Image 1: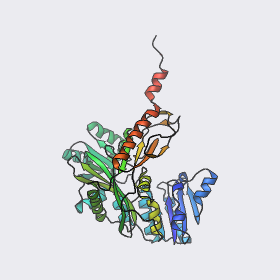
Image 2 (image 1 turned 45 degrees about the horizontal axis):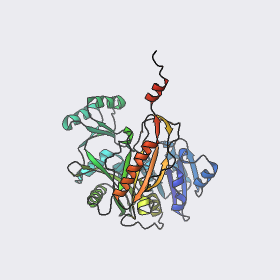
Image 3 (image 1 turned 30 degrees about the vertical axis):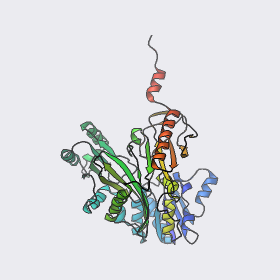
Image 4 (image 1 turned 90 degrees about the vertical axis):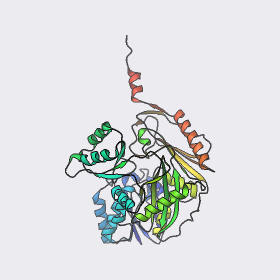
Length: 423
């Protein structure tokens, strides 16, 4: 078979030719930012492909789809692979144009369009927060009148929590209107409003192959949320213990949600579930792709498998690694976000016991701003242990260490340093 691979993430961790196997051909259309500038690394990343096209303007560029059609006319493709949230619909459209199997536009839209998703979930009886589409100001005002503040407003086809806001009062409402001028146009906006729920956030990650769930395991983010990073607060997550009483209910509600959507036969997924203050589980949303923010690495540590590899090998009909029924060890992550200022000091190594890996994602001298997505970070750690409690203790210690070891000079500090003393 001949595979078309659409890629926009760093190729160092995506060995598509190896996963697809020697019996098949792989053609790569990739964002230039995903390819290393170092010649030796670049050559290794691009080895094994039958054909490679590197595009400096890959994001939402319809010329990429047109070029894929031209390549298909020369030598037809049998499958299309796309792992990014922002290529799910693009790949589905291409499958329709090329006449190849895989996730179609109906399925992709159900996973990408949060309004369509909520409608299908609600119709099947999956508990969701009250919601409504927001095209114009009157839609939003009507929702607030019915449900009150706070409300959550988000793009219907967003990702990484980009553009998600919690509107708590009329000042927040005015700020939203200032940033979404399309609300005043005839065509309107593509937004969704939801009633805000005080919650603990869980995510359930896994993979389905040929219609059979191979992995479906919950993690908790405890007292952190995906919006915390954009407020300058750290985010952490840890796999649940096998005996956690919430594990089965979280798996059950995720199964119900996936059954309510037109799911493809083989796909990865990342679901989010709220547990409200009364202990009820409320389904938030689900994506048909690998979870971001180092969730892939947490699952590698816990289960010993790389889900994108399992996914691609399954599509190619190749042997896949066996996935354990329960984690071999509990694993977790912490992301340390930027905040406005100049990064003066950032540690190079983490001495905290239980921390398996530490990475710094910025260097001293970098001018930082506020995080724009829920996975933007200047530092991160992975932790392992025998239990969730052990992992969370290591993550808490790492957070304390990173906060003490990192120095960010804020704009206020800069102003104070240059101020002329009064005479």
